[in-house]
Image 1 (cartoon, helix red, strand yellow):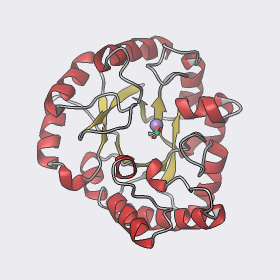
Image 2: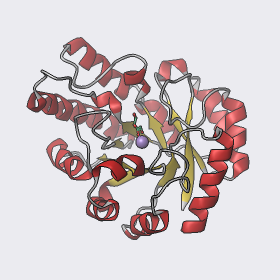
Image 3: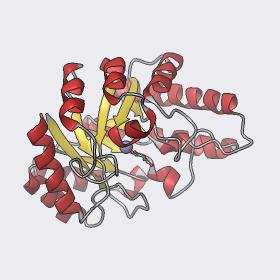
Image 4: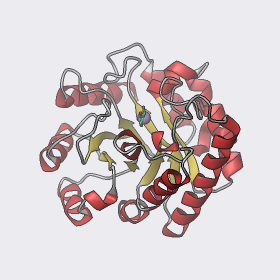
Length: 268
Ligand code: LER
Ligand code: MN
């Protein structure tokens, strides 16, 4: 099992971006703890020097399995389902602008909250149509570069669009692109799935990436999720990707990351 952990390249409000702040220091810390990879949360590729990023990542022998895009929503309000077409267009162009960076690292592009939240009064069917069209355009743009996109079902308190794996699988059918799949996150699954294990089995080969946090969104081992069972089922689907820590920096990022690593390695 390959383990990674989320690191934000910019300041971010999102609480579960475990590592934030100085890039070089954090990459050194993540590598020294024994992680195989680092998942990068990047608000806008324009704000990042990919040469410098690649140099630091390689220096520490880390792999970048995925790039998170949610800060375009969290910090700038961009979304695929905003009623304003110029905001939707900006969100699509932003996600497409991640393709060269993702191709460089052979990383998956994550579509989390950049899909939007659908405010009361906005028609859900219309929002789903906008979402499908945006995902088709982004998947088509990523395909020639060999880049894959993964949509993350997110719990009901953060969005009303695609809360569970079954809805994610329906969306995959509608988008109809071979490079489009799902990112499953144990924190959201604990809230939304009738059975975490059954949903992992049903998603099977369409699991492109996997986030872990415990039930309280602290490090795995700090809550009541059964990671021995969850990881056994995940690996039994044939999943060969990364298991990526995305949890609150409790009691601090390094201690949480170390506790997570020890707990996960002891389970699988
Ligand atoms: C991002 O990966 C995530 O899990 C969401 O909760 C973002 O708000
Ligand atoms: Mn997540």
